[in-house]
Length: 458
Image (cartoon, rainbow, N blue to C red; front, side, top):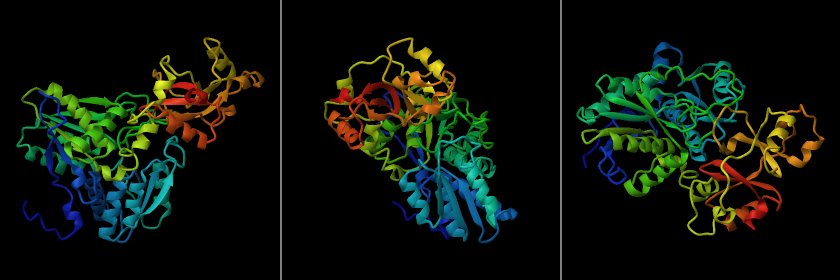
């Protein structure tokens, strides 16, 4: 087993993470897949590398004074790394996180002594409540404050070019043929990718299906800390300055369902408890493995551990109510609603009442129409967080034709997962006061696919 290294500081333990071969989930005949276990860093994620590099650089340049305040907007992992570094080097940390961040991540930030500021996650970039906008304001207004700015700080990709890439090359004895990594800030795939591409390695960016990086419509997804969400009211879609999109040779787009089911397979078939972005990377790596040939060697970077997602990705109730998982017993929701026509009729919040009436005249008129964020998409399903209200069709007659639908919208319809048991769904809806004729949206992999009445469940 060995004695292990001895360090003067916890920060000396960052990097040199193990490479582990996947044995049971790789398709037969596929190239071997190895994973870079970045949760082995002392703060629990790949972001420890960038956090330490950014802080050391800021200290060296004087941007962060002794005992200063580190401020950052983060989905959690960079914040955890910065909180750990701050504690070890005598700084204060103030971390701004979106309200969708797991309770486990927030608890970790506070455990390191960081101050946590929670703000709405699904708002336009120009909104002063946006994670990055709020963090920048706090940094400006705090004496001795320094904004880490992981999205624009060159120390982020540079540290991966200096460490992560060379580690992988050395660990594989130069036999790696494909690197697969997700892009959040883009620091890992840019830095490690730049180094390995210089050695002839093909670089593959793994991306959530709706993320803008891979050409998606920017709608919300459930895998945290990766991809690029775009609020439809954002004026300019600006990507992180540290993400060099010329580095990846191609992008593998992976749906949330495939990512989260891969997360569960890794825990139960490989003994690897990882987060959603790691499931995304492995799902993409398994695709690459199938085409890489017998001489290929695929390495996927796994950013963090599943320990900070136990309340989501490993919670059967959370997964089932969102339509990611089937309950073990029935009857299930899909069994009682029967087949449905593809394509959910919705009304963009910016549509006029007259425009909505024209749409309704084209087919059977539902009791209510979900109101959604206006978004350019060719999709026929809608991410649940994009559904922001509901209008009753019976109320349209009394509205002015040029009124915007969104100004008359009530609360969004209740939702049920298609794999939930009817009894569980009915009990939850009754407790919420949903009435027999009220509309319900049925979710598959977190997206609304059809609308039924509450009475359809009995």
